[in-house]
Image (cartoon, rainbow, N blue to C red; front, side, top):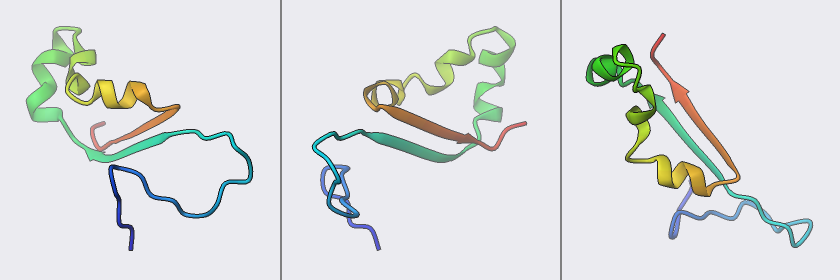
Length: 67
């Protein structure tokens, strides 16, 4: 079980002093709430509320459930 403290979980000790951050979000299905943005060519706004968090990470992954 993962127990996050301040959004950080250590799985093992690092092999080096270099640290990267990874953000993973899943099951994002904004179809009904985002269809207007997509049709208007403003799909970048779909994630505007979480974009600052995604931008701070070295690697960001969002799994889309929308075709």
